[in-house]
Length: 116
Length: 116
Image (cartoon, rainbow over all chains, first blue to last red; front, side, top):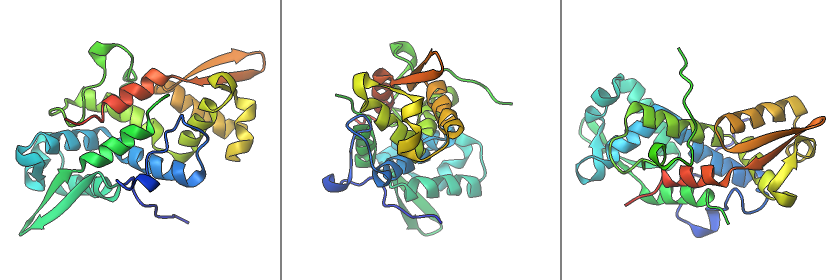
C-alpha cells in the first residue's frame, strides 16, 4: 500500500527535523525522503535550475523541453513529481503550464541536512 | 552506459553550485542528484539518523538492523548506497562494518539548496 504524505512545508510544526538531530521516526523519514527523491534525478535538478534562472523566476513548460532535450510528456512527468513534492508551483495559462520554484521548500530541505 | 560520478566532496572547486544559482550543466546536475537520490529513501534517512545519534557518531551494522526492521543484507545494501554517495564512511573491524556520517557531505548537499 502506498501512503501519500504531505511534502515538506513551511509549517514549522511539520518540517525540518534534522537527519542528524536524533533518531527520526518513520513518518518524518518518509516526509524528508520524498523531497530528496524528487531532487534525486539530474533532469529534475536541471529543470529546477532552468526555472529559477528564468525571467521572473518562472518558466513555461514550452521553454523547458529544448534545454533538457526531452519530449514534453517526459518533462511534464518530471514537473509533476517536483510539484507533488512541493518543490514547484504550477499555474495553467491557456495552453501552457507555468512553473516557479518554491524557495521555502528548498530551505526546509536544507534544514533537514543541518548539522550541530 | 552508466557513468560513475564523484560524490559531492569538500573540495570547494567541485561542490555546491546551488540549484537556484544559475542553469546547471549536466555534470553538475548529475553530481547533485546522486547525493539526493541516496537521501531519497526513508530507510536510508532513518539509518543516517540512527548512526548520527549513536555513541561517538558511529554505528555497527549489527546495531542498525533491528531499529529499521530489515535483514542485514538489505541494510548493507542501503549502507553501500550511502557510502557510494559519499555520505558515510565505512570501517571494517573484524566481523562487523562500522559507519559514521560525513557531516561535510550533508553541508555540501544543503549548500546546493541555498537560495539567494
